Length: 165
Length: 165
DNA sequence: TATTGTTATACTCTATAACTATA
DNA sequence: TATAGTTATAGAGTATAACAATA
Picture (tube, each protein chain N blue to C red):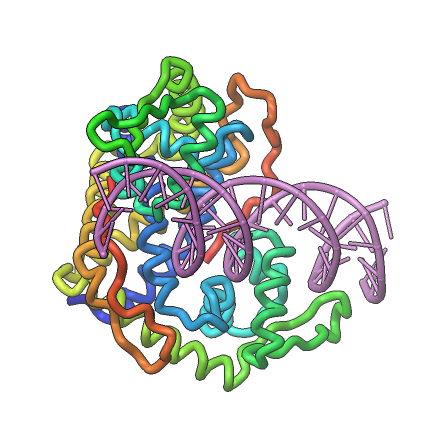
């Protein structure tokens, strides 16, 4: 259990990560913003899946997922087919064009990352990854146990417990 | 220099941090969203300063800073006074009311963080903080050296080199 | 009735560009 | 002419709620 001072520092660091994400997002072409890229990446990594599963991996609401998916589907980067076993569901799969797009994106994105972190030793990158993964786990686990405090607007029992990517 | 696989993993982790930030942001009262809270926090931490300095610490454009500042100023949480030495500038300072508000926010925010990370040893929190700080440094340093790639819409020479909080 | 997904609406955060006022 | 800051506008991302189709 760390000191409050450390949590303050962590809060500062977390709130400042935005600048990095925006920096990386700027490497993406205008027709494929970050949300769309994430959809392509997850479908490539995990294979075909349904909306609900994708929403879980993205860790956002399904309504948001639906919009991202519509965007990439309109451009032919993914295919949506009805699930024969449950006609409410749609199965999402990366198309060859989507695969090409993803390769192109990843190349630019990862080269930028490499460029910025070229002087980082392997182990540091590894360590950062695993600490971030663990951070997400810790947050996922305590999702229901939100601090109840003095101010009223509290959405008490949190919705579904996402367990993202 | 790490392997591409590691950068892919880091990219995944970075893109998934959003869920944590949103989780923490939900602890804030509606009248003081994250942007406003960040302004209060930085003025408390660094003392009075001008807009341009605050924009640098927030690592966002000054136009964005201006709006956040207007929001907290309207509520009496900060005071804006003209700089007598340069009447274009305005000096921003936390008011007592702003200090109270910040204390209230921080309490909720940090208790949530503590709750989620209660099983983390000190050193892990420390390590995560310093890796994140270093990540921001690495990105700040390579800000001008963006990868030039196949797609045209490249805002070549990046704007000012922010060196945030 | 419950679940899967879509759409409408609203809000936050951000950047670019045009503008005002000082320097 | 250049700089500090503001405002107008536009775009991305998100959530909530109402809805349609299916289970």
